[in-house]
Length: 291
Length: 248
Image (cartoon, rainbow over all chains, first blue to last red; front, side):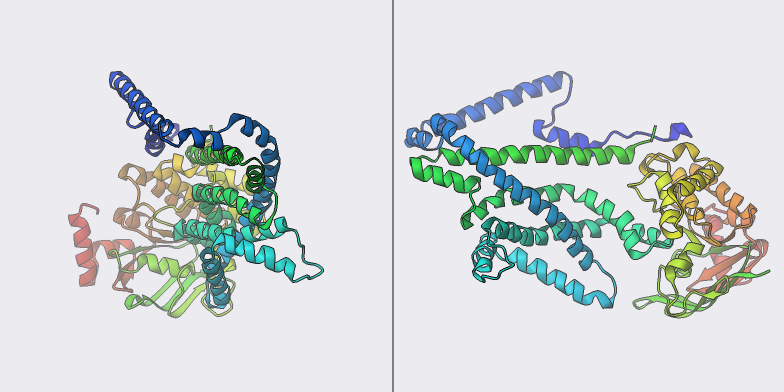
């Protein structure tokens, strides 16, 4: 019996790994391929660098966007402001993951009695995916505090987060829904046939599989969310983009923008690697023989 | 002998396609009934209706004296007493075999994790899967997966087991181990309704064989009679095709 269990090499994963390096294989052919890849890469990027640095406006662009002293001066301030982006992102992400799941489940409810909930879910997703993010932020950020209601917060950051949650909940619920619909109905049938209720089947059988499948697109939306926190600066919250605008206005130099850009990228890369790791771990688990 | 299952005038259609057109069937406790018939004759649909996975259009299904097709009946309660095993196993791929087996006893019967595990391990042991308890379904052979699916259904301690062509997706060399499990269940007195294409197995295990044709039970009786001396022309034709395919 033990011989029957087998650990398969995963062609899909090998494929993905080799996408960056092309069709590199070991052996003599692989060495030749590696050499060609190296030469073509060096040539391409050298040519690109030469093209840019020999353009007529390059000296000006370099001193305006890539000034080392300006970079050193602005980085601490922009970094401090960037903490606000991280904070907004973290708070919004948790709320979005929860609300979007509720919305997706609402849209997947069976039966005629749940029709109003389904309609509400569809209307919500249509509306908040349709309206530009910056408009939602502007209307809520300027409009809601203007109501001058006692219990309503006036913080621009608060309304910025609310706007991002409203918009990204719509996107992420669609991602969840795609995941739920990708789980074959026979899985739910098997769970129901064992006597589980609709919600028990959803919670233990359908959703765990659905969420695993949509981790990569979920990450995609979260990278978008990370970047869109910069839009809250529009309301006046001093986040990284707003801070670099202030720096740029004070020094007539845009290097602060470069610093902000690097900070955003620096946050995205670990998130992307983390997702790859999650997906790979799940794949390993499903193949696991338990020994 | 009391009745485990009674089906009366069961009708079921999908859109304009009438799959079941008045099925009557009674199954006694500890009886093993095999459903045979061509693909599309309604075998799977019949089993899915009994498990209430498909709403029926007309008729009545009574399980252990309870009309399960009546209005306001608690379907989850009914399903706990009826085990069903599918052609494609339908194990939960994100859970170990042990979790697959303990899930429903924990959630639907309210067993503690420990009791559910103990019971599951006993069952897995009995069906030669004890060493696979921590494996995930994808790492098992088809035969092992199907045995695990049978164990998962048995863990609910059902009164009635429905087996829907459980060997049809298996490589030929893996069929025997699954049939062996079903034989053991029959030997233990489990009431079963088995849709199958394995005629020799049906002859071997069934107390009664029912031939389904075009949504009705055309002919039923002891396996020797149905498989060796069928009365109906349609049954004869069906068996002739099976013999030609070398499956009898």
